[in-house]
Image (cartoon, rainbow, N blue to C red):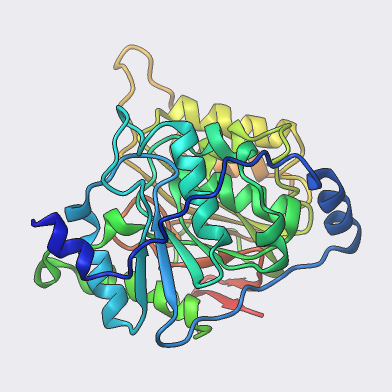
Length: 347
């Protein structure tokens, strides 16, 4: 691809880049205010012509790889602004820590940008989260969109500022050949547009025989299981009391999943939930034949919550998979799990 032509087809990124800011200033006071009042802020929904920024606070992604996402965002009627981290590489990262902080800070502080779509996950957000200044963002919130490593942002923003974010696919999940995409894959990508514009989403949740039936309302929080565990006892650690907790994972051994869930169990994060949603647990690594763990993911999860009476939904269409539907973290939902159906609706 001709980079010059590519860049000329999008809204140019502002030449100035904010200085790296340390986020500790008023953070503790912001935490106290939010936790005391339990206020939840919903960023403004987008309208045609609004600008969506793309930045990479974690892993590297090329210009060519984000082109399908750019094309789709434009098809939806939005403008696109590309951060400096796209196409920049520092080993596995999209630039070094300071560079990724500057780019993310610049985009969230840009008044013309109404939502921020992350280029990809990977690893790196936890290395920079404490260097980002969210003071302006807290006063003028905008949607942060992503999953996997983006769980760092969902958890940190929910914990400290009570601002809703969108757990969904990122740029690297948009197919380059839409003719080969499945209907569910296409529908889950379109769910990002629906979240951004305030439309209702109908989630195609199949009934699982391991489900625990019941109904509950609560604010949805969570994301990638290993990252939620990694954030424990930090300033980004979420409070799960009276919440609907969403978890998903990929490329782990069964014993590792068990260990991470033991952490949630022992730290009390499973005790006072309104409900638990288990998304995709994909690409489970095979046990050593001489060291078989002996339990499925379903059995591991049910073992950890057997003493609690809240509903549990398995195989919800969220996670490292083609059908990865957008859900809003920090927003109240109603989950209904029966023997014949499962529904999740925003309240």
